[in-house]
Length: 272
Image (tube, rainbow, N blue to C red; front, top):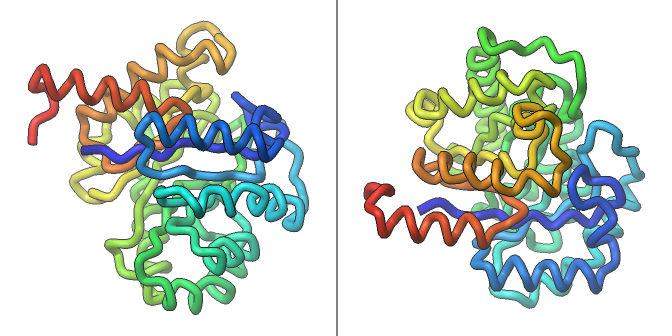
């Protein structure tokens, strides 16, 4: 059974829902919606990774996150923090989040010094290491191609696993995310190549998170449809992830994934 991470962007400029949940009351309503949909985790972000997003200060990022954390902490839900800044990650750990998701793969120079001791105190906390060849910034003009992307991802995963394990973090706590859309390339074939090769990745790296939700590569393959019109394409890709038994699926629409999973099980299309 795949676990769903429901996305809660407390941002002004996320690519698909920027500004919608910046107000704490709206964020709480969205959290309730994700919970009622069966979300296994809620992942909160205060800094957008959109190609055109503005970089806010660490203080502003933390203030956005902190505005919703007390509400989330009262719910029966595991909390994941999406941030690439060690200072913000450290505050999240001190607050009690259960997972850190870093789109830069914990490559910040201060990551070890700020996080090692906190992670040692909290042995149940997971880390999601996203493949990044651009320091976690979604960029155009990528050097990745369908021919080289899998080797690049594999090399990055091996390097980051080795480094983070040297901090004293057990491998079982480390999940890996190949990154999709503009995190890889503006060429949709690069992302589709990764999806087609998930079996190979899973053989070597069984703890994977994958997020295809409303991503640019789906739009580019369909003539450039806007983010909120990508739900059907997203669901098709997420059904593929379910069938590949990806452990963690990060999504904006948890209900569709859970309903699809239930029907696939009824049809005996999800083997045990």
